Length: 217
Image 1 (spheres, helix red, strand yellow):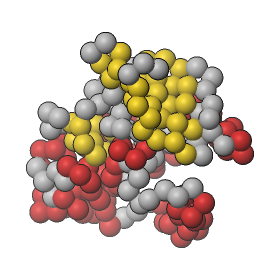
Image 2 (cartoon, one colour; image 1 turned 90 degrees about the vertical axis):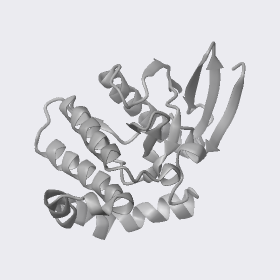
Image 3 (cartoon, rainbow, N blue to C red; image 1 turned 90 degrees about the horizontal axis):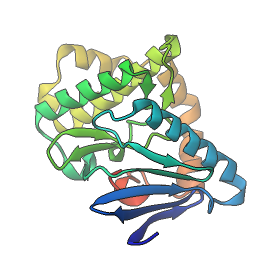
Image 4 (tube, rainbow, N blue to C red; image 1 turned 45 degrees about the vertical axis):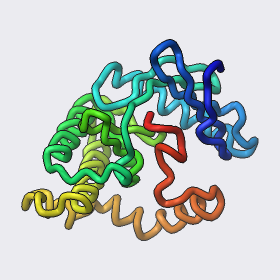
């Protein structure tokens, strides 16, 4: 790729940024993934492609440009990950909650908003979400969808508690204090294994994010 730069290389392949005319693009390439996880890298790539295709030209998310067997090309979102931007403006979190509701209305749950690098502050100060490999598109929005949507919101409110705690409403505090049964089960039984795999085996840091895992894309 002309005018390209490698941003990340790991077991799941490579992530590149390249210029096309005056615009930047992000490419996720799973063809270089380690052999024993290549099937998973391709599956996550296809999952992200399906979600981005369903979201179309929605604001606050990267737009799908092209997808092939091992490669996904999507738009670049100029901004900073939350843990660098440190948003203290309550209006930012109001806009982020509005964006999240819009995505839920379109039938998508993100499933990975607990990671601060997946929440961006764009150059114009507006919110955006990235990294949709674990997202789920379910237009029927059944019971499981509603539980996961609730957890999306609760994770976003955790970030608000970190950066803008004085502006939490009573309802938001109640949501923070009442994780779903699914979340409690995950925390007690699945998360220890998840942390072992991601941090010990894959070497991901707690805040692996935009600059470490593929740009503000």
